[in-house]
Length: 269
Ligand SMILES: [Zn+2]
Image 1 (cartoon, helix red, strand yellow):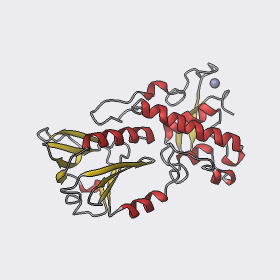
Image 2 (cartoon, helix red, strand yellow):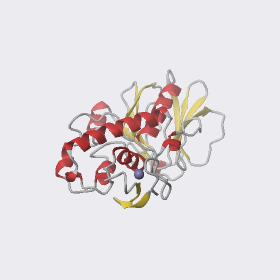
Image 3 (cartoon, helix red, strand yellow):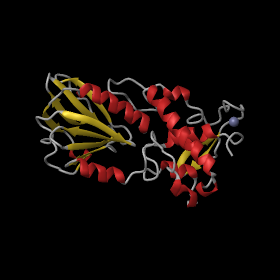
């Protein structure tokens, strides 16, 4: 499932691909990926340029110069492609936006957990994103203030998009490994120093992963169909039973917050 670095990589690529492009038409092939403005989303943004491509956590927003906004959640397998308009429509293509210069922007999502939601303007977008926690790329001092009284596992808190936006299973395990915190520790048992270090670790892992174009685990693909490269730098995620890179003991696996979790029993306390 794409997390912040993968969504940021998509945002940058879509931004580049849509520069100076005008949307001249749209076709919805499956309406169940559309939320809000059902029945008219194929008319939204027509004749408009995409002025900005924004991201908060794992959500993207395509902001048209006419004020309309499409929020895109990639879900588990959602992806964009910019292709010549003459290309055959691939299986699982749910929405096609026809661009000038005979190109299409296509939203493809085999598992259909992704969503495209219409919003009428910036106020609606601000309201929607205010319900999410701070963006994981930009955790400022105080980001973890709500954690100090919480008894839930730190990993559960990191996965909660209302607490921190953009962290999923991969980067939660990676950040906790980097700072030596066991995923099962209760938030309220962490010191402020540990939480400050965790915030810095999350930011630094996110930046490194973005520089690699994200991690490709199973399905995530970049705009041109290419893969990210950060999966080669993962310390613990997907490495259950393999030796810890620091102490060489085999990495443990278990379930935390309902998710498969990998950690080092020796390095993480
Ligand atoms: Zn270790």
